[in-house]
Image (tube, rainbow, N blue to C red; front, side, top):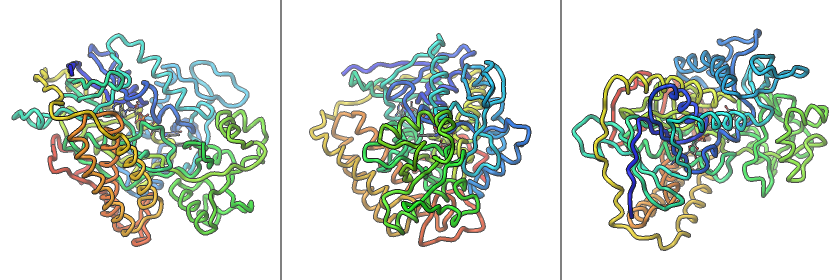
Length: 551
Ligand code: FAD
Ligand code: SIN
């Protein structure tokens, strides 16, 4: 089997808002950029984002309030330096998007003037002000497709769709004496069934989150934690993986695969009810339906278990029909597809895995432990989200950190003239074609089921240990399978999912308290001192030391 060898200055793995905005930020430089995406370029969580992007854009709002809300949601675990940088960088990130052509929804009665305007700001859980700028209820689609249009016009960018990165190429793999650094990645061309070698002077992991480790998830199939697993294998530290965010309101229907009902529906007056029509959130938190997400998801889980219900209900039908259809046209249409009219009555909802707060440990420039390897977006852990992400702070993080990562990459690539050594070809001499694909799909199913049952919204040490036993068995099978058979995308993703499951369980077992999204019946109290949970691999790269995380 032939192996290609493709070299560029910058290799970006992932085509979501993190990866594409980074490519655009580097575009004015004379740099060759390669983008890999394991599906179509725009397929990923970014495309499906609904609510919007949090930014202080209103005169009545202020940075301190947004910073404070982020810290409160994050249950005292957010890094203040990161929070300030991201919050203060928000207005200019929004302006940048508008200049790139993103059309946000303006306030009622005003025409979009193409440059500026009174944008409509919605509200979501945990926010003390209306500060979420949006494009109706499909913000992600508007932002992602606009960035995609811009990127596709860049002459110095080469895009490889349906190419799934398998592993990073590091000095450790090359057995050079140089300090630990990243030289590129191996990727499988899914259509051609061929492994290619991508060499680069700087590599960025913008591969998104890992919510597909759970049976029920709002995420598209791409969210299998590939970047997190690759970085771990390459010697990078991983932090705070126990903080898996469950979105409270996903449409409950056997065929509605992860159909999200935006928090903005509650922001605009939607109420959560039991099957008998009674509200219940008042009893759980003073902010009721607009309490931080961890609290609402846990309250729903509690009420469902207590009453033996399959779901609870979300009701916004008291608002005028025109208002609902104007603000939530896509959500209303997807409800209708499954037989629910949200303008006329309540819709059944359940929580589902939504966001990975932990990830590859980075500083505010996206730098990881491995020289010349960056991580941006949901695959990273910058310290912004702490123990629970504030709604609509994620797209914002992608945009702000991509900008500072681009600046750092530019500086470093200008400073030293690195040459990429000759990279070894992917070795397939010892493997054959897989005999039974069923092994992979069965293991995938088992993993997602035990993660849901044992590592879900409410945990105990016993459940976590059960999950650890199962993941260990799976790992053994996967390693054996991986060592003997030719790789395919299902196997690559399963291997990564098993790694992120293992890291999540390890972090959850380490945390002997309940904080933010990690709630355990064995340790229900929150400790006074908030501590990060940092996992260090045996082959720890340790270069450069990331100052923000040394404290
Ligand atoms: P993604 O957008 O997930 O992109 C990852 C990319 O990496 C994809 O192109 C994927 O194909 C590629 N990739 C992955 N692995 C590999 C590999 N091995 N090789 C090659 N390519 C790979 N956040 C907000 O702030 N506001 C919202 O309103 C909001 N709503 C949301 C609604 C939904 C339904 C979901 C699922 C999430 C929402 N979020 C929201 C969260 C937010 O959308 C994501 O956190 C964010 O888009 C992540 O961007 P990203 O670029 O890091 O990753
Ligand atoms: C939503 O629209 O409810 C999702 C917002 C987010 O995840 O930040």
